[in-house]
Image (cartoon, rainbow over all chains, first blue to last red; front, side, top):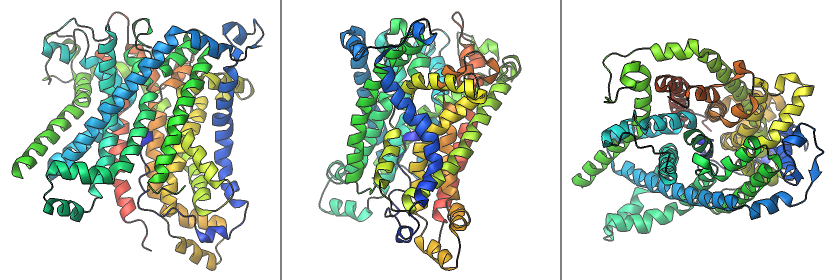
Length: 314
Length: 279
């Protein structure tokens, strides 16, 4: 899902209103054009979501999958089990904390470097843009392997430079989270940087000149002019980051080998997956998936409201 | 003013170096002889680059096969997704119809669904599908094409919408006055004009399909020949001693196509948008 969270590139420039020419045409045509998309999305996207919800109400484990025992409807049984499960609450809490820390770090780095880009000369700007593009494009999988190697216990560059050979970053819960977090931020700050930089470029120079003429310092004009103008864009970037960081899977799964020692680095997404495919508790895993989907749905509704406020016509 | 510029330049260059360093380190380590990788005094360069890791990875571990598998899946997804997304984007931008906004919001919501959680129902769906249509069952590349197509579409449609909307109505109206039929307008007029946007959209679809780890890991259980790169990479992680040379060579093989693709298209995208249509 790396680059999937980019904002729509043509959004600002183009007109959103459906054409009047279109209104005159046949009524069935748009549905005809939507048919291929529906043929893919209904069975492979809509139906699995429905099934996820359905499975979460059933006792569905290895015995039921292999047909040894009948599938049993247990109502909210799986959810009751989750509420009573201390581990679920612990994972939920650390998912929220981890995602929040990632969002703050990504935004801080991305916004800071976006400001730097506006001040830097042509060549440094190009270099940073290209480097960021490379980090952005790199697959989550290979990003994870390289960072693991850089921080390897004995052979890693970082441990050797710091002179702490033998220190294993993945033993401690928080050092492991910090390392995974750094990898994720490396991967995701370019989106924030590029988007905010584009937004700042779009601010007319005259506005900033006027502020300077009125005696505003660089910091004041940033705080009182640039930030307010960019507020809608910042909202979008924040919410995109929340959605993205809440769903982190590959980095945790690969770097901590499926959730860390005794699952200490599990986040909801990994926990759901491990519950289903690791412990063969498919019903319970589905219930965790439903909880996650509902949380993300709430965030998305905020997102849609934010989009509307920026004047994007749906 | 000058001091500020100098500070900004320094920070920008520093940030660029830090950001690119992991990628440099990956390629460098892939080229280092095994002795230098396991050495306890590591150096940020090598004087005797070697292709031994690449050779071992490509022949010994069958990575050439996995590379082609990944490429085949990703390219199939790109082509199908582009066509389907183009048609859907035309529908939601060029027509007014009931539920248009509802459809759009559904595409948006679909992008936030945690696809990893959907592996649970999809695993059973693909398993059952496989008994009816063996080509898309578990352990097949076809199953990966299907799910990636589904998960790239919502974003692809969302992105294509912007490009289709940028094509002026006047062109279509003129063509219609000249008696062009709807398919002609669709494929001869709109399609060529949104081609640059289609390319940009395709990159994102390609990257999603190419990078996927969770579905490959879940669906390809026993058919080793049908693995794709991300899942196959895990082969090199061993409980006692990780084969870092192999891991870095395999990671390089996996990263380079995406990097090239991304950089090439980045330029084409800008050029395409600038010179697209003169109204």
